[in-house]
Length: 397
Image 1 (spheres, rainbow, N blue to C red):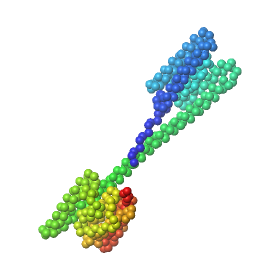
Image 2 (image 1 turned 90 degrees about the vertical axis):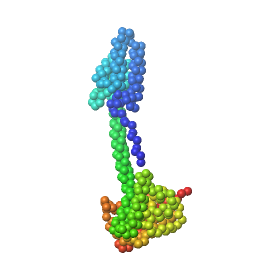
Image 3 (image 1 turned 60 degrees about the vertical axis):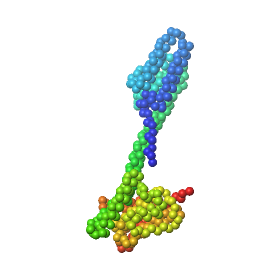
Image 4 (image 1 turned 30 degrees about the horizontal axis):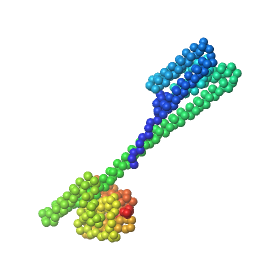
């Protein structure tokens, strides 16, 4: 499985406070809303008050607007702006208490306070904004309208709860995102390790069934020639070992390039099986049952490796007088049996794999079972050995 793609990073609270990430667009809307409401409030104030009253209030409003713009710019440029926020809250409180017409802008200021400050400082700044708005509206109502006093306070409490909930959900999202990213990294690492282990096992089986078996058989022939030299049989053993080494060299080159046997992949399956077995058992007999037909490439490859490994084991260990390979074509399956009448062994007492060997039967079983097949070994001391494999085939349309 391919590694899964990493999700995009979730902006932190500081990033959102600076106007970066998805909430940056919300900040822009809030800033625009503040500007529109401030202008509308200033126009309303000028229409309802004399020029003498307008001058001081408008100057204070201009100072608030300038300070707000400064804070917005500093937040975008990642500069410190918390101190300026304290000054803005103070000036805003004075402005709203003097001119309640500007109370509508408190929504944007409340949002800015909660973005700038965390913990109890944020609650205090937001509460001061709500309290100043409540005082200004209560004064605007002549000090008799309780709704003007309690309304902004209630709205402040609700906005605080909503904001805290949003922050909590965002923090949980960031935590879950970090957990998912970590899990994805661990899964990818596990898949890579599993793939590496599987590839090493596959290459190990290929090397065992080609290079190791060929070298072992060649060594056996050379040792026999050494014991009988200079008899004519010794020369025949040397020629056989030489031929086997050449074949082994060819298979090694093929393994390096494509992990396949070039001499076995193009011939019909019965011919390829006979050739694979005769590399180690020159006098082997081949029996074919059923109607021969093409089989999938992975099934073919597994059958050839199994017959190579089984024939090599027979040549090295069985001291058999006769060996027979039976290839059977069944509906939806193909079977392979390698029989010898040699020394046999106890399959239940196999030694674990080591530097001296012990990989052959295990490698054959792995090959067959990985393709959904069934592998078995029947043997007993002095009773010969039968290595059997049955592999499912996907019929070609």
